[in-house]
Structures are given as structure tokens and as C-alpha cells.
Length: 493
Image (cartoon, rainbow, N blue to C red; front, top):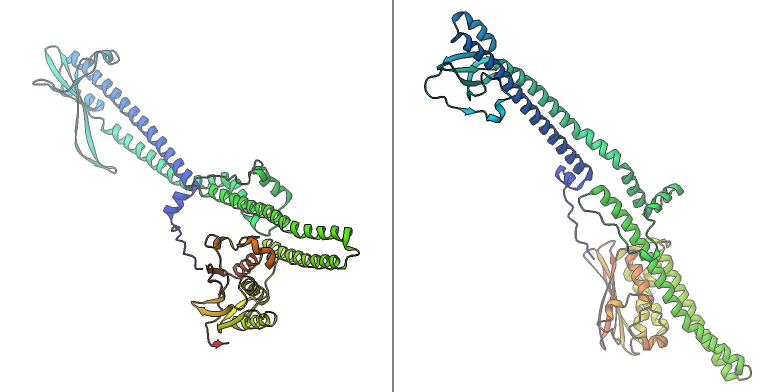
């Protein structure tokens, strides 16, 4: 049975960011810090603009007071105006701009509170190491006497200082943001390290590693609410969080194994008890019969002895099969792998079967195919298939054994002309203790474990089994195993 390939997502940066909680938290921390810096920059910018306006208002107010005293500045006062950064000109025509609301005029100098304000932007030709600045002119038009004066303030030097300070602040913020990408990830990994260690501990429970009592106690504390009555409980974690997903997958996988083992054990005990109850009851019944009447009755004595021997043999076979499956379930059965010819093994089993069963006709069609497997176990699986064919095939009918190879697989098939299997029973024939025909179970001596053992042997060797059956026509069961070499020779027997 070929498994379809699994397409794993590419392990790129985008995948790591999407599926890692470390990157997810780190990005959130980065965006939070970026947002905080932007808010602080906005507050700092608004504060700087407010301070610049107040500085402009004070300078304009000083010039307005001087105008109120002396009128237009004389050439002697140009040096004073240069120091304030202001210039004065007569306003001709209607002043354009905006008025400060009356409620806010009380916070402004009295000389300029009711003036008309405007802001002009134009390129400044003065270049320095910071490049070209946009010239900002803050204009206030006021009435002095019967004339209107336009007082202009150009804070170029202050703007240059602000630009330098803002450049330094932005550079520092960018440096801190890029540094936080690495320091944040390291901090988050250190914080999540206990969860990762717990996930690794839970994952390693499926191996043969050694765990100290303290480690097991820590893990047991996390699963304290899960017991034998709640083994179906599972931990649910979002797919986008790798660290927690690993932990949940490890614990859920462990719970699946425990749950399956628990259910298998309960089913095993129940089925075995049921199967052993019948022969024990028969033996007990014949023992009571001997105790009452069989001591002096030779016919009753012989009948009881034969029945007890038959039931004892059945119980021995059943116990051996149960022990085989128990060792298989516990993975304590080591395979003795060797390279051998499957067709030769099939012919050997066929000859042995013909020696003990003369009631059926046997045929074979084999091709030389080599496999790497445990020879005794493959022989046991083949005998199980032949034994089933013998039990459910009418004497005189044909049983055929065939071996073929194709596509790197070896196929071992047993086909009979027996009673066949009902379609609804075919999917269940490999279940333990299942019998397709309960009415014939006692007559054939079947326990319902043979095909389960054959299936376990096949799957343990990396193969699978195929079944095709029609009622009153016959059954064909195949064991498909990986081949060690391609077919070389075809034999007919």
C-alpha cells in the first residue's frame, strides 16, 4: 500500500512568522513600541509647534509695542528688528488670514490679540549642511493709529534646531526598534522555555528514554484532571502557535496511545474471558458427569475423556494465540530478518499440508520472488490462510497457492472454492475473535484470532493484506510484502 506524499509548507521566514508564537509576540511588541514612539513624536511635534507660535507671538507683540510708540522703524532700528527676526511693512488693502477666537484672545498679548494672522510657506535659498529648508513666515496684521501694519516673523534658526533634534530622536527610535526585534525574540523565547521543555518531555514519553521522578511528577501535574474515565479528553490549541501546538500534539499523542492501550486491554480481557468460558464450562460439565455416573460406565468415561482432551487442546491453542498477540501489542517480539525465496517457502508449506490433508485438491502457481522477512512468522501467516481455506472449503474442492512479484512487491495468495464470506462481514474478518459463521465456529475449532495474527505479521513486515470473497464461490486472501529482488524464474507445480 503506497502512502501519498505529504506536502509540507516551505520553511521560510513568512511561515515562521505565521506559525511561531515567538515571532507573533515579537511583531506585536514591535508594533506596540512603534505606536508608542509615534504618539510621543506627535505630542513632541504639537508641543514644539505650540512653543514656536508662543515665541512668535511674543516677538510680534514686542514689535507691535515699538510701533505703537515710534511708528515705522527707522534705519537706526533695523539692527533691533534683525535681532528679533521680524520685519514690518505697511498693509495696503484688506488683510487676509484668520482671527483668534475671542475666548482665546485673553491668553495672547494685548497688542496683537485682535490682529489678523496668516502663515506663508516659501523656499529658502539659504543652504547649510542640512540642505534646503522651507521658509515659514508668521504674519500678524494689526491696527496702530489709523494705519495697518504687517509684522512678519521668520523662525529659521529655531526650525533648524528643531530639525536637528527631531533627526536625532528619530535615529535613536529607529535604532531602538531594530534592536528590539532581536532582544524581544530572545526575551520571549526565555519566557516560553518552560513550555518548550514540557513539550519535549511529553514528546519523549514515546521513546525508551529515562525520566526522573521529578520530571514525571511535573508532567503528571499538568494532566491531573485526565484519568481512565476521561481518556477521550484532548487539549485544543490554535494552529498558529507552534510552541503550544507542539505541546498539545505531544500530550494528545500520548493520550491517544494510552487510550488505545487501555481500550485494547479491556477488549482483550473481555474477549479472552468469553472465549475461555465455553471450554471451561464444557470441561466442568464432563467432570461433573464423570463424578456422578462415569466412574463405572466405560462409554461415559471415554466420551468425557475425549471431550476434555479436545477442549484442553482448544484452550492451549487459544492461550498460545493470545500470548502471541499480547507480545505483538507490547512490541516485545523481535523479528529474525533474513533473505529467502518466498516461492520456495510456499511450496514447502504446500507439501506439508498435502501430507496431512487428503480431502482437498491443491494447486500452485509460483514465481521466484525474494523477500527480507522473519521466515518462521511468514510461514505461520501462510499456514493460517491455508488452515482457514481447509476449514471452510468442502472436501473435494480446490485450494490454490500462488506467489508473484510486481512493482517491488511480492504477493502470496491462498484461494479456495469454499463457502465465501458475506459482503458486510469482509471488513471485520481481521478483528480479534470475529467469526463470519458463528454456527460453524465450534465445528471448525476456530477462535477468530488467526487472521488477526496474520494481519499483525504482515503489517510488522511493512506489508498489507487484500481480500476478495463471493459467497458460495470462494475466497482469495493475499499477503503483499516488499520484495528484496525482482522476479527471476517462474515455476509451475
